[in-house]
Amino acid sequence: MKNIMNRLTTKNIFMLVISFVCMFFLTTASPFYEFNRSVDANTMYTVGKGLLHGLMPYKDLFDNRGPLIYLIHSANAIFSYNSFTFIYVIESLLLFLDLAYINRILAMRLSARTAMFCSFLFIPLAFTSRIFYYGDLPEEYALTFVLILMYSCIQYNWFDMPRRYYIVNGGFVAILFWIKYSLVIPWAIFFIYVGVACLLTKRFKKLFIIIGDALIGYLSVTLPIIILYWATGALKFLFNDYFYLNLTHYHVQNATLSYTLYKLQYPTFGFSHHLVIIRTIYYLLIALFICSVVRYMKESKMHDSNKVLLVLIVFIDILATYEVGGASFSYYLFACEPFLIFYLFELGLLVDKYLYNKKYVIWALSVLALLGIFFTNRNYRTSMYFTKPSQSYQYEYSKIINKSKDKSLLNYRFLDVGLYTYTGTHADNRFFIRNNITYKPMYDSQRDNLHSLKYKFVVTKYRKGWRLWKVDTKFLKEHYTRLRHMRFNNRDHSEGWIDLYVRK
Image 1 (cartoon, one colour):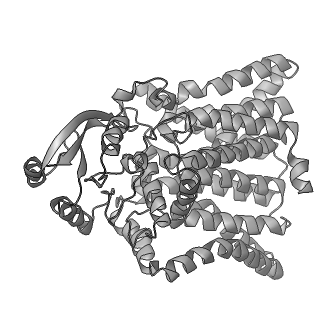
Image 2 (cartoon, rainbow, N blue to C red):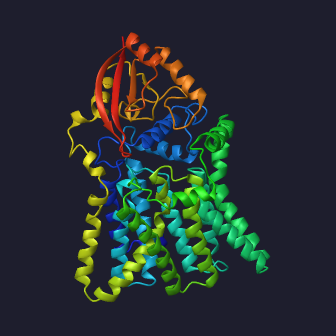
Image 3 (spheres, rainbow, N blue to C red):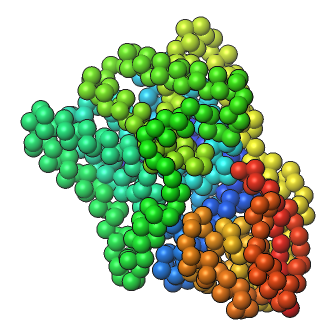
């Protein structure tokens, strides 16, 4: 307790407040938004709520994310059944840790004011609409944990790092592994490097201690999850859906090195590949990034072996994110955002050189940096403070469903759009949505559910090039009445129509 009180410095409290204020506008999980428009967040929340009703992820409710993310959303449902307030609190605390560790790292070589300015600038740079989407990303946990890993590599030599760091990082591996296993790449590099270094330097006792400490951290998270799924008879479903289906059915693509290098030639944030200016800036940013990493390594007082370790973590993680994750969606790259710190370090050197004695200018720049969130992230425009409720299908459809005694709902052939959340209901069939995988049992089950006529309300969604099969359209016309027909607009710029049907 005393240690916690000692850390409640004015600076930390200030950064904590800044984190909650910024995240209030950045994530659609915050109370600023009446409706969370993220289909992924609503899917995770619906599965998480199922746990409170005795329904196990994978076994009773199908989705292909990690089991820990559903437990986190179950905790949110305990605090607030019809909103994402607890998720907002978690995201704000994660942002606070981001700021705290970026500030710690930069303050090692920059002045305190400049380090704070660069820390604030990190927020609009990292949390853009192109990368952050609506928020509530598994990659947010990775961002924070990678920054802590980087700090531990910079602050301590790998051979005399305090044991608690190995335990903590073992816990980080477990948390990320059971949220989204592709996020553990930096720790795979870290532990392999340290293990090989121990063998080469004949630090055998040290190696066993590191393995033991890492296992303590890893098993403290993993064992409760395994026991829970074993005790409920859902363990085989967990391994089948989370591992097997993800590896064989989810975004299966060309993963050769040549293809990865090909993808790295192009901007990955939705810009046209043919714009010469955009591509030139993209290449210049890559060159600047490499130069910034080299400059940081020269300026840093790290042990040479730690410099090698950090460089391996940075560049292998970036390449592997393209290779393993495939960067199929731009938010996958959010896990690589910690490496923006090298750009910030380069900028900080310039600020210290030319503005070191102009503290008011630096503080003014800090305020402008924080206000930058409204330029790089446009989520605030989806708040009811900016749009009319009648323009939101979540508002209109949930209002209609909530008037009925029978709220049974089928979300047909697409991801969860939040109607389970805002009608206060929970899904009661395994394939309650259509996931982004090619999996025949899912398609068959969804159609069986539609044709069973046990659901009073059906929600369908379509856009150009993506419509329901004729057999489904014909069935809906015969047995359901279309109540509303409204437009949707997703963060990935896909636009189309979403319809609400009621059983005749």
